[in-house]
Image (cartoon, rainbow, N blue to C red):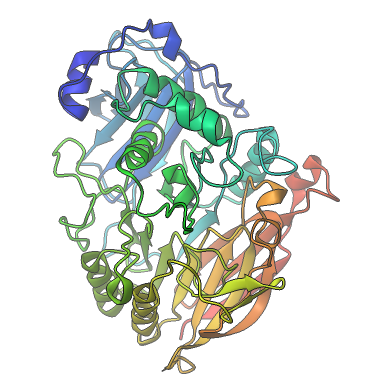
Length: 525
């Protein structure tokens, strides 16, 4: 696909920028992946279902013709996702479920672009696997050397944390939000310089906006992931900063729902660098932000990880469809809520997990949360009203919790990001809902790249705490340190392990031997 065809395909009629190709070339260094030759590839991020594979890739220099991906005996040409040939995606169908597939990536002339590798598809829906392991983390973004105080973790430290997590051999990873920090308006951003670098009257692709986007985003994604996750499918959820602003509601500006231009920046980032969600037979094809394009056929905001009959995981972005309609306001579109509650009630999976992009069970008093609490004298409180907070958000929250607690024979589990902490609690009451018969287990997964100035106790003025609307029995109070969570799903239990690294007292070398600082087992209800 050439540059003009791409523009016609993605944005309709567009004015091609009169910039040379080398202007767009990204100089982001890809970290070396031990004992694997990345060749001309800068990053690889796969997504799989039972029979499909979606792969996002970028290269050290633009490719003048589409590369080829071979998956076993199948072969597919890449589809260019930028306008210069640096970024490509590959999508295949008809793969054998529950199998390991050998992948080869090369030119149409047969030259290898990197060493071959393997990726496994999900087992068929009626399979009865005994075990699956999932890695959870959040907030891996941030430009090295930038930030509110000490700066985001150096990229090599983030690499080390993720490689330690991968050494535990998870089958899948969930990267839950804040892959990008490039706020255009909110506090902590270099407002004027960032805002004026974009031309909001122009398209994202095909001009200087594409150059600026790559300069802002590529260093936060490509060197962090590189090719380390080539055999570990990653499910990416977007959160507020991925829409190029924080979630703020003030007299001057309410940042959500996102402006059209910021929304296009978020969509472009995803299109270039990390995979969307593949279709699932139990997820309606008419959910918002689901493509009808037969070649893409993906959802940008709502996903499913189904591992046979052992696990069903529902992943949902609560920012994209947020509304500001008072008592009827929602975080997720009503059609999405119907899908979530229907699957929660109907699934035959042994374990069902909700994975929202905003935490359940704790608040730091920020505006874009489910809860009305604000920070007062260093603590969260409802003593004062939260400006521009919407009562309908909490109503939807209670409907989802009621559905989760109502499951029979399962432990309801929620794993979320956003709050830059690791935590474990059990929600026993939500408003007038008595949930003690089957409390909701809620988890904060830990954060990879957070600038120490981004800890809630610093940026919000209070450490995360249960809101007044809830009764939460905290087993692990929110811990503001870098880390991740490993979840093992067995037929009779779920085992959760939290790992943490203290930037103040530990060396990067200590990461290589991190052990869990907290472990819990949840027997099947």
